[in-house]
Image (cartoon, rainbow, N blue to C red; front, side, top):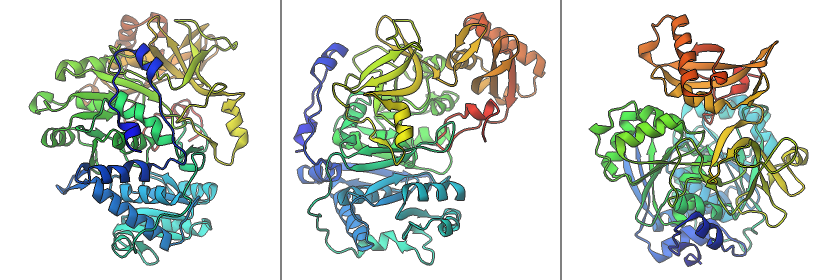
Length: 550
C-alpha cells in the first residue's frame, strides 16, 4: 500500500500540478499501519526520527523501532481500557515518547488530543469536560503534574493518568515501564473507517473559548502536499519543523506528510528558544530542510548567520503568521535561501503555498493548493476580481477536500456558522494579484475601517518591521469619533532604542510608515510594550490589545 503514496512525481508548473495531482484514498486508511508499519517492512533500518535535546542527549530511531514502540504503546493503552473512539490528551512537549503514544492511539482507533504544557487548571478542566477526555499522557514534571491533578476533581471523565517521567506521581501509570512490560500487540479486528474521528485540536483562537476541531483518518494524506510539495522533501531529507507537539503545526511538520515522503524528522527538544543554540544544532546535524513561524526567522536574522556552516540547508518554509518582506530579504541576503511561505488553518491543511516550481513574491502567501476549491468572496457575495479584497472560502459542492475538518465537535451551531451550504468560510481576508498569488490582509474582525478606507493590519506591520527599532508589532483599529477607527501600532522595541525619547520615536515611526506604504495607513496611535499578548500557540491576541476579553 505504501507505494501508492511514494511515487516520486514532480511537477514543472502550477498548471501541471493542478491538472495532474491526485491523492488516492484507500478504504479504512490508518496512517500508523499503512505508512509507518509499511516503512518498517520495506526498509526497517531507515532512520525515521533524530531526537536531541538541550542537555546534549541524542537518540536515533528507525522505522522498525518506531513500529515496535508504537505497538507496545497500543498494547499498554489496551491494558488500561483505552479503545476505539476514546479521547486521550497528550501533553508531551517535544519528548520522543509523543511519537510512540500518538501512533499507539492511531492503532487502536482512539482519538488523540495534542495539547500544550502551558495549560492552566481552568484550561484543563474546560478541555477535559468538553471532549470527555478519558486519559492524559503527560511529561512527568512536578508543576505540570500538579496542574493536571488540580483539575481532576472537576474532570470526572478522566480515568487514567500516565507519566513519561522523570516523576511518576502516586496514582499515575509509568508510560516507559508500561511499554517494556506490554504483551505482544494484537491488532483489533476493526480499527477505523475513513470517516471516524482521528484527531481533536483545541484551537487557541484569538477570541472566545477554544473550538474543538475534529479531523478524520484520511487527514494525514492531505499532508502529502505539505511535505512533498511545500517542504520539498524526499526520502533523503532531514527535516526540522520548530513546533511543540501540542500545536497543530507539529502535525503539519513533524509527523504525517514527512513520514509519507520517507523523510527523517529532526526533533530539537528544548525548554527555551535560543537562536544561537538552534543554529548550532542545524549546523551540527546538517539539517536539509527547515520550517518555522516568522517570529523565529525574525530572531535568526539578528544573529551573525555567517558564523555557522549552514551549507547542508537547502530549503526553508514559513507559516503561522504572515511573513514580512523585510525578513524575507534579510534571510535571503544572509543565506541565499528563499523563504517559501504557506497558509492554512487548524480546520484545514495547507491551502495556499509557495511551491518549488513558482518564484516567491516576498509578502505573498503563494498560490492556491488545487486540492481545495478556493475562492475569494466579497462582502456582497461576489467572487472577488484580481486586486479586490475578499474572504477566503472553500467550496465543497463538487467534492470535499481531504484535510478539511469534519466539524466543531459537539457544536453543530458553531459549525454551521462557518461551514454551510457546501461552503467553508475561513474568516481570513486576502486579495489575489494578476499572477494568481494571494496576499494576506487580516482576519475579518481585524480589518481596520478608517475614513472609508479598509486597511489590513499586516500591510502596516510589514512597513513597521522594516524599521530597525521594531522587534515585533501588532496593528489594530482604535475607535475614533471622526474617522470611525484609526490605526494603532503596539510595538516591542529593540534594546538599543528603549532609551530614546518616546515622542521623537513615535514621529520617526509614523514618518517611516508614510514613506514605505500609502500615507493614509500610518499609525496615529503608537504604544511601546515589553511584549505582545499571545495565545498559547504564539499567535498575537489583537482582541486583547483592542481592549476586549483577557
